[in-house]
Image 1: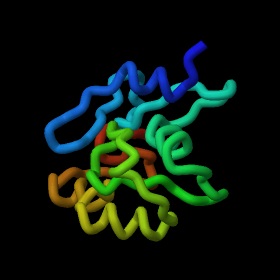
Image 2: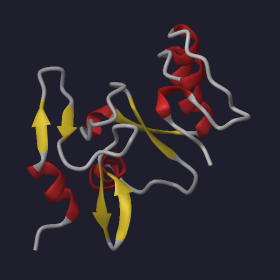
Image 3: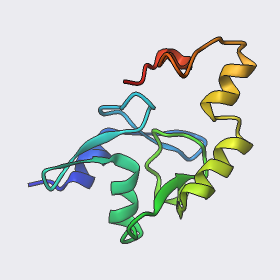
Length: 120
């Protein structure tokens, strides 16, 4: 019986830039997701786990390539929430920055956010 990592590899497209793009189910933010040991897990976290090792509690698996579909272990590294926020700000990927640059209007108090997301 194939393990979850084998399932990932069957759905990977290797790009010239070195990214291994997961072609299975993607969540709303573009990250691959699948089941492993009866739980939903992000594909890049599972790739890190199988190829590099354990992920400490509270640690995030970040992408050097800024490609959420990528599961190439060489493109993955551990970081904190602060590291992730700093990385997103450098790459202009925070939703508020994108919304302002696109001149979107929204109202957090009314639950209307950019990118069409609504928070309940």
